[in-house]
Amino acid sequence: MSTVINLVEKFGHFNDYCNPRVVGELNGQQVKLVKLQGAFEWHHHEHEDELFFVVQGRLRMQLRDGDQVLNPGEMIIVPRCVEHCPVAETKEVWLMLFEPATTLNTGNLQNERTRTELEHI
Image: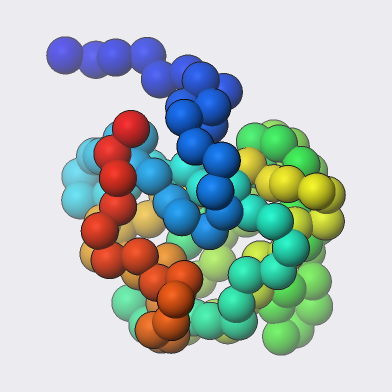
């Protein structure tokens, strides 16, 4: 059965940062919500492209060949193997991510920010 998902309501379910939540799944892909404050980590994904859609705030996607700044309603697709570092330019950024279910949030890194089990909200 199809269900309407209210993103603002879902973002209200959590207040932590860099801890993605799954709000939907389709064709082996997951739709994830995450809040970001400050800079994340430079990383890349060997096998997966990532889509970042800014819901609220302003994001600077640092890339080795030049930064891209995104405002609400804008998105960027980071191709596999491209090193990147998301940075919140405002106090807080709300992001919707679309990526394969196997994608680790820290890509090639394993550290305290790595999430292997994601909560479904």
